[in-house]
Length: 297
Image 1 (tube, rainbow, N blue to C red):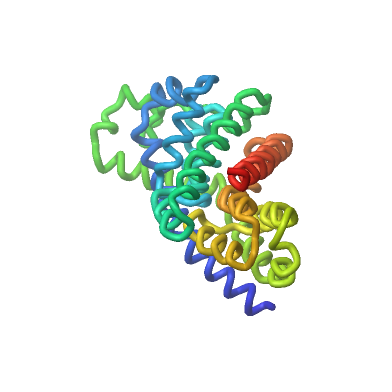
Image 2: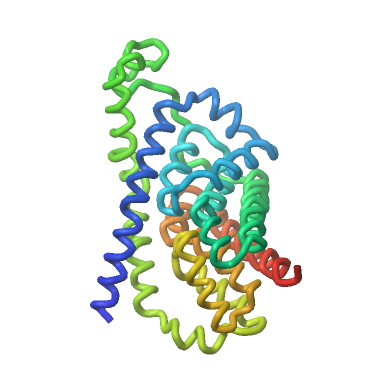
């Protein structure tokens, strides 16, 4: 069992670390090059438009759940509201171009089209709910201050120096962001490896693959394990071929990528237990409803 744990840990590290590196770098680029005024205008207001924008952008970005975490927290630190942040955390890991292509090749056009629009519906729903929630903002909105001279960036000359801007991107990406969410991410990876190594998956599959129990199995399994959106497709196909309800497979594809332990721990730290509970509840309910809808089509 210990060998299995370290094998899974090695697998997750190989999968997650490159994604985190990309996510941290994107967060640094966003912090340095996205103007505060753009965040305030497009993501810092209540309403449907900011939520829809973050959802659509999230479906296009080729990063997984772990990579989306630093980007989302970076936008939050710049002043993005809770709704767009939650919508981004749902939409970004739940699908990607590669995942849609794999879905089309393995499960067909109908499945690929449905999951694309299902992710948008789920992201917008969670985001709009987030707009209605009250919470204590633990991260203060950061003014656009130059990291080199501590003056407002518009009043100094460092913004014109490319090397200074590169250093600012790297400092924020690989020093500030790991300090903010690094511990929670590491704990999340260790927990994911533990569950993958010790959950008696074979017995669960044999007992719960078919019928209505498949929905419960998919939801619980999706919440307990993390698999990226592309990797969930062949796994879901294997479940279907063994007798799983196709609607239950849709549930697994929607839940698995967006509920990693890293996401859970970071949401708990930044927004509190109430927001985390509502987030997981909405993701669970929406995925079940969408899975049942797909089965009935």
